[in-house]
Image 1 (tube, helix red, strand yellow):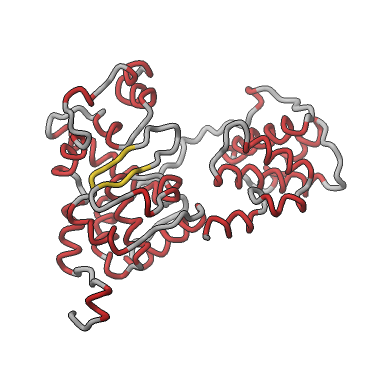
Image 2 (cartoon, one colour; image 1 turned 180 degrees about the vertical axis):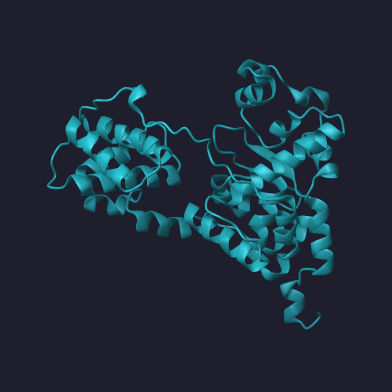
Length: 324
């Protein structure tokens, strides 16, 4: 239901809303939806950039090279960062290609930022604080924080989780960014959280707001750019150090999180094919062998044990019968 509301609200994805779309936006939506379907969040951002450009252009005219150039000047006058302009450059290129318009630029015309990408991570003590405040959260907030702090899921991966993805013993993470789907054991300490909540597919904006609520309830101050991905960065850093301390190859972390083999090769070996040739599954016939390596040294599972020991979850059936 939440996903249907999201599609109806944005208008970019919903077929029902297609009749009201600008023809150029309709063409862009079709381009983004086939042959490879982009993620809903990706479609939304492309459509929003295109819609803003067409509103600025006005009068339903077909843009020429000068219009595109003036638009980028206009955006700079609005103090938009070069990094954002770079993203909009490729989004508007897709709009032009979808409509058969002339795109007058080459790759080296793309706006370029001298600044390093801003990728904020939370401090370990702040993630601990989020977990220790679990009794203040709703069932959904507690569930998604547990998933995030255990497997470091991206927001898109959190969005995809529905009840049929897990049973009493394991959960399927439908990995984004061309990674491999991974099935994980559900740690014993987290099973009550999973039993208490039945997730449905949500939109990306829901998770942005959810993260802010969680931090607010826990008293953790965050700045711009923080979200569930910040936990992913923290968990990766701590996990790799833990693996190194235990003399386990750090590339095991990539397998734990379902990275694509090529990405794994680049990150841990310097060449894509090194990841392709890496096959940790030959070391054990146990499909959960990597989980069993990670969980004993996982930085946040002991914190969940402490948090749930201090504030155990109340079974709703027990509450209704007066047994608590």
